[in-house]
Amino acid sequence: MTAWLSVIGIGEDGPDGLSAAARARIDAASLLVGGERHLALVPDAKAERLAWRQPLADTIAEIAARRGTPVVVLASGDPLCYGVATTLVRHFAAAEMTVLPQPSAFSLAAARLLWPLESCVTLSLHGRPVEALRLHLAPGARIIALTTDGDTPVQLARLLSEAGWGPSRLIVFAHMGGARERRIDATAETWPLGRVAALNTLAIECRPGPAARPLSRLAGLPDDAFEHDGQITKRETRAATLAALAPLPGELLWDVGAGCGSIAIEWLRAGSALAAVAVERDAMRCATLARNAALLGVPELRVVHGVAPAALAGLPAPDAIFLGGGVGEAALWEALWAALKPGGRLVANAVTLAGETQLLRWQVRQGGALVRLAVARAEPVGGRSAWRPLMTVTQLALAKPRAAPP
Image (cartoon, rainbow, N blue to C red):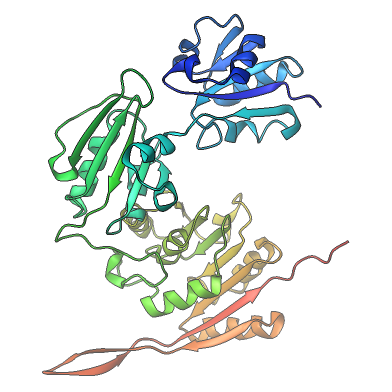
């Protein structure tokens, strides 16, 4: 099949910055698709014009209806870097498409700052909660972020100041690569402006203030990093639980009986492209775990208020399951095991005799690793210190067999 759909990155300099091949494709196009700003950058193009509609699927259908005729989609910078091409590749075969990129906003900002791009954190906050920035705060970290609009820089300056990172250096680049390019330098705590130009990219050099609390992304955050009512998997047990769950990029976790959300939150903090659903029957705890997720940099955590297994209906199949509540319920075990993908992991912690009985039954039935976790912490007793044991936890880690190859 001939590639009839071209996705062309275009910068603020318009056609002057395009290669001859890109200009030729625009000249030959029968349909030109893009945002109003992108379409305005090529006023001389003769093709029929189509601005993106909402929902986006409506425009995808119109593009598909032109299959076999030359169609050009204009996008910002590198269309495969948080750009529209990441959506188009889900709808059109690779043989149908050609992508011609320009430098991304990340590349342009790094070049202006002389920051090696491979040592920077790059993320998109476009249309996403700004709390996602919290995940990446670390002394000396360099972050380059795509923004939603001209209000995003002041929102991030406020977030950094409130989180104790007020001395952090902020650099906003507006209209990079064009005649209207502007640079604004300040610290988060002295940010001088309100709204800036809507088309901007933000760079941050993280500097902690006295109140900052840097948090590792490795499993086992301090218990007081979470708001909770006592229903929390304690730090040492949590680290062992995350190790048993063994998150891999792209995987989905169900945290059933999530409490304050500590397991699901640490799962999401563990790496890229992870997803999690926290299922909790108590409405107050659902609100608490949503707050914890935002404050710990993973606002994308999906919270389901309900009682499992009924609350699990319609959820995407998980790669891993943590069972922290309802461990003694046999019907719940059956439902979770049936929902788990082949090759997935199920980890359950029990502190009651009823829960431990179910762990033993499933260990006999499916095998797996059965361990007992006993932790004692040194705490003040009178004028001295003594060991105070936590409740002993019995943990079962199961792996669901993969289907035999045909």
